Amino acid sequence: MDVDDRFVSITGLICEPTRARMLWSLLDGRAYTATELSASANTSATSASNHLAKLLEADLVKVEVQGRHRYYSFSGPEVAYAIESLANLAGGPWPAKKQAGSASSGLRFCRTCYDHLAGHVSVRIVDALLQRRCIDRTDTAFLVTENGWEWFEKLAIYQEDFRPSRRPLARPCLDWSERRPHLAGQLGAVLLDRMMTRQWFRKVQFSRELVLTHAGRQGLSDLLNLNL
Image (cartoon, rainbow, N blue to C red; front, side):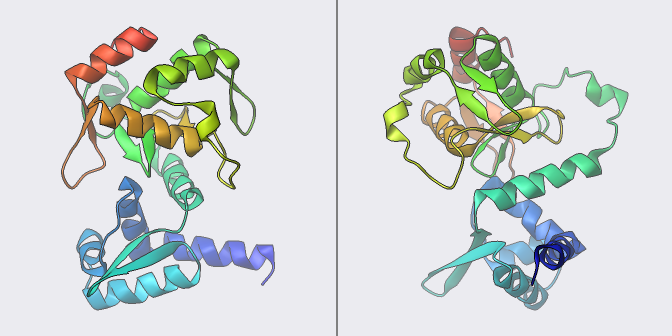
């Protein structure tokens, strides 16, 4: 199968409504059973299993077996990036009330995008890092400066801990609600992990939403002079 045919095949798989809903559910970075994904897509468990078999064959998802249960998740971060990016086409103009930017909660304010931070808070962090020359942006990547590595060390993130990988170190991921990039890649995942360890964010059950805690507001104020 050549690239053109594979592109048509993959987009057809992703954009089928039931599969699209299941893939959207996987964006929180967790693994789910076929039964759980069937509930999120409002379809039967048998139908969900059939859809997941097609996604497995296309290498869009992977499955891990634990006892009697089979848990499905994205096969890699690039699949998550593609699903998140498609939301930019679906969003359209936001109602004026939502564009005001006064809300300090909800998915648009702060959420996970696979294993990194997304939403208003994430874009504000990127803006602050760019302003402080901690990172520079090219067309396809964020480059961490020497000053940037010194800043990341404040969060126990060290340059020598990263190894060459197919996954980029730091890349822009277009945020569907802000329409500007947030930080993805290996660095984006580690940054979210460090902030979660410090309890700067709290997960909302059964949702991708993250709650910015008082400790998080104080930490982002101290390190980036952000008022959120």
